Image 1 (tube, helix red, strand yellow):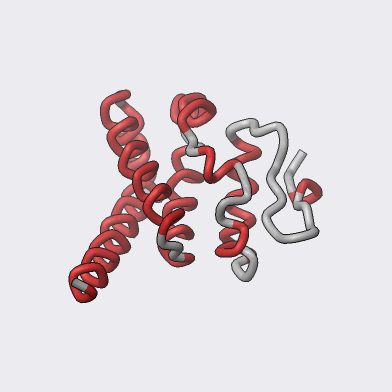
Image 2 (cartoon, helix red, strand yellow):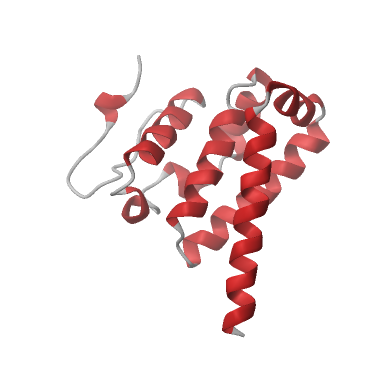
Length: 136
């Protein structure tokens, strides 16, 4: 059973990494964002992954998921859609512990929240808000 969960985690990580690589390519981003069906299929998978890592935290996986969402926010239509379908767990402090030591991922999340127009940035580290890091 433990072996199966390790294998499952590895598969999830590799799959998310592949999606990230596709999104980082302009052609891949355009392909995924061309139709609502493709965008929402990718969004549904990412949302499910966010829910899974909320229960079993994985900083490595969270990093790739946030990077996928950030790249999606580079597309104007996708960014508009993310305003309503970005998981609440990325908008609140659910992952503050995971992000405490990873400045790059924390910066990506803050940029994502800025891109989609989240009016209030969560406190991602105990006692320290990061509103000042957002680009105006």
